[in-house]
Length: 348
Image (tube, rainbow, N blue to C red; front, top):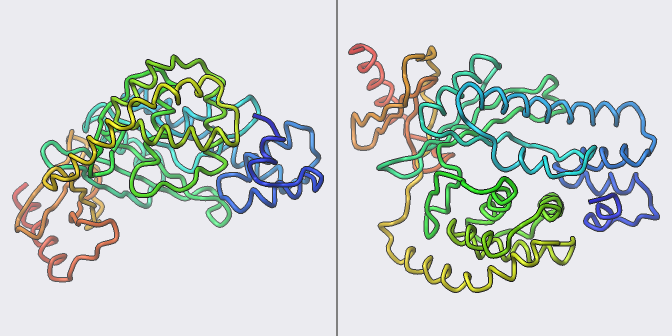
């Protein structure tokens, strides 16, 4: 994984020099800091603004790393996806992190982590959704501004009791990841390809694959794990595309071992989606109010004061559940929900 590879992936002419490479990278919000880190590693001279931009990006990743370590010690949550993938990049090459993704062993640990984040940071937004019904899984995203929110993205931490959410149709929620770290990272990349027609893998995904290709994989075992997690088609498609751009190393043998798994998985999904009752609903929380932190609550509480007014009361905020993340409840429904909360307050 080197600078010439970056030129190839970004379709930049090496003769045009580093400025052209960085210009191409700025078309993708994920890539400028990675390219800047590669140029610094190569000894390319750059001005103070570029160095300051890279320093802020490094600081962001370091902050996420400290957050993940602290929350792991205090609550048992652990990082998945982006942060572990960053560990497979060569020294000095910065993998950008748009968010920190964490999986919790149970709902109590999830809310403990959320409370810790709300207590320690100027959290301005807390989004909640529930996957499934009985039992359901909880996902929470908390966000707060960067030190300079005009130029840097907000901090964003996503926590869930389900490591792999599935697609709500043929691929179910799978709560746990249980494999070697680099196999888990491959699983996470494959999972990101679920849900409708998958876009062509971008340069960052290809660099992720290139980083994983430097690790040892046992082909038959890895293919069996991917199949068990219902991700053989996504993993195969990802590796097929990546092979056109980066060396696959031991992942080439993994791709070959996946071939016998594809037809069975496609057949299984067809049978599952034919039964509409198996579709897993996702319910999204429309914020009704932030609350004083309920430190004694281990889990959130579901209330149904009326058929069209499902409420989710959490240790940090209360929500009206809706079928879509951007759904707007009718004023009468929202008023009824707030009235129900006030009645609930009076009983407590």
